[in-house]
Amino acid sequence: MIVVALKEEAVHLDSRYPILVSGVGKVCAAVAVTRALSEGELPSEIINLGTAGALRAGLVGTHQIRQVIQHDFDSEALEALTGHSFGRPITLGADGLVLATGDVFVSDPVVRESLARRADLVDMEGYAVASAASAFGVPVRIIKHVSDQADTGAFRSWQATVDECARALAALLHAS
Image (tube, rainbow, N blue to C red; front, side, top):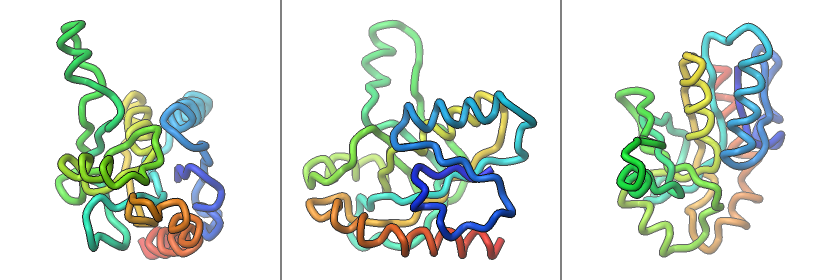
């Protein structure tokens, strides 16, 4: 099953695979994936395709994710408060980049710089997709194409490059 946030990210995919358009953000993605997994036969794999902002200068292209974290969830504080662990990083494989997921479209250079200390890319759904898939025991891959530099030009860049990103992601998927 292929999971994308927006239909714009799926326009160049063919119908070989079931496609789930989850909506934007962690809550939408978690609910959509959980609903899809609970309603029928489990897929052999979930592939989350989508756009991401680069947190490092010069980072472009398509990348597989090896680990995903939540950048807007204070795991350490909650563990100190409750004694229980919530929202730990999810490791997906040995190769690839680190993706920071949060319910914020990152376009502030100060936020970008802070996130770059922990991750390479930023998105709004990856952690939720990985978490829901993990809860059902379904393997997951996350593949992101850089749409913007997560800076003051991010809004314009995303709008201008989303179709190019969708083409690159579809080409990668169709080649495999």
